[in-house]
Image 1 (cartoon, one colour):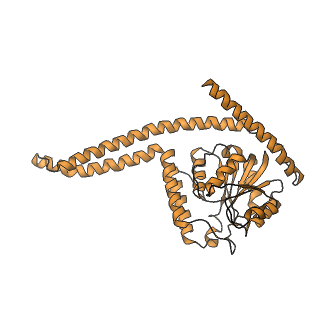
Image 2: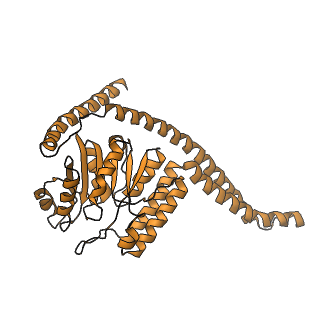
Image 3: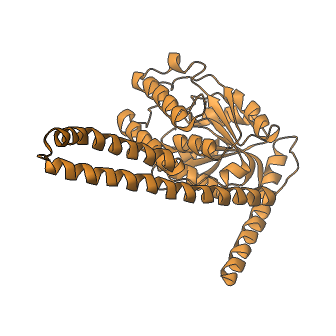
Length: 349
């Protein structure tokens, strides 16, 4: 188990990956840098290996798939997640590590939007999109995270090992932020300068396609994490619509004693029944959600209790190599304990 692991998901970042590794080695000499290559065709993996990083591979395309692989395979007390495009300064990493290891933060946000992002970023729709996503999530989930979609974050062991990665692409950042809000994780923000990609480095983010995925992810997670609000809103829309269409039918009945718009009356009846179904669905799902929250808290206790402890590494070089060897042994012991518990649970069932 490593004390600090720097995780760098990469797809065709040959122009910048060497500098990213060099910068983080200087700032965090006691960290192990992992580069996960996601089907690059420009030799990113070779450059990263030559620069001294541990190179691994994820063959399912998409940033979400890469992060899922990283979180499953790597065990560390503190994780730093950063893009390989050299847009985030390594100088903030030490402060982010201190927030996780010293302040016991579960997630640390590298806040771009409060610094140089709007000046450095040349893509207008990205600026507008970031602001809309931030406002939407903070409004729906009643929070105040400053930068929802930043690719620069630090995590605790218990966050990484209890975070279910469901997204496959760039919407993973949105999923992380909402998960932290919903599970009452301790989140801190560090303002860090953002710099635009250097010349020759091309963004893999599709503004409109990935933007739609982010919006759909927000709606999906709002339905999952706030089922009562989600289905109550649907019930309210259906109920109000039914009443509005029913009023003319009722007025006509009062005045003439006849129901001339009988099909409208039937539709109103079905719509109000749908509203009631939606309301009761929200009540049932809210109860299930509450039970899932209780189960999650128990899982959080278990993961926290079983987190292996390693002494702090004061230096770099040799300590990092020793950490790798020791980490392999501790990780194997950890996995053996989990498997043993699984076998016992199956026998009890």
